[in-house]
Amino acid sequence: MKSCKWVLILMIGLLALTGCGGDDDEEETADTGTLVFTMNGEDFIRDGFVTEDGWTMSFEHVYLTIEEPTAYQVTDTGTSKKLLHAGHSHADIPDGAARETLSGSYMQDLTQGTEALPIGTVQGAAIGNYNYVSFNIVKADDSTSGVVDDAKGYSIVLIGTAEKDSETVNFTIKLTEEIVYTGCGPHPENIGVTAKDGQGQAQATFHFDHIFGDIDDTEGEVNDMAIGFGPFYSLASEGTLDVTQTDLESLSEYQAFYDALVTIGHTGEAHCDTAE
Image (tube, rainbow, N blue to C red; front, top):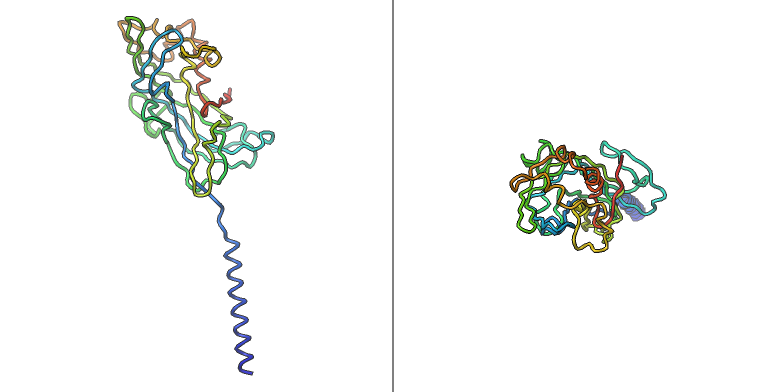
């Protein structure tokens, strides 16, 4: 009888252990990785370029501020709909899509470094391909991460020199335009792929050749709205150009400038939609 009693106790103990193991299985954690948000002015800003009207532009600083960058995964664009996320609307985010957002606003000097500049990191991002991004260009203020005093109150500040023939112009162009970009993507290089314990990238990219043109763009398709540097030069005095966006409104080319300005937002080479 005693041996049967001990066998019964042993069986009950084994059942209890098996039950505990089942609870652990139910508490499996989801696979996640790391998503890094970046900003990129590309080589046009880092190295300078020749405009479509022959001015060689070199940039000392290009301060640009974005707000609430959001990265999301799109596998079926037919299910997309407008959602509210992080306090403002992002169009074209599919219902239920995995997405990550950086709250607040972020300034970078796009002339720095040799590649895209990180602005924030999300740990524990769901795995998958964050192939689309949305973001807003906004005016910088005291709460902006990375803000510099000379750029407060402006969304974009371009500082550098432009040269043509025997003319040299030291320019400072300060813009206040705020632009909402949605549905940027898909990034052609799939940099947003985030594997388990891996790292993906969500990139806001800016193409300033859309404004000034690129003399090497022989087909004229990419920069068909560009106005060159000539109109800006017309506002210079004694080799110095220091203007705000309000000053630029005096140009006959202002509407063309504005139309080009609002197209600078991308992710890689992929274009964005612009919210009205």
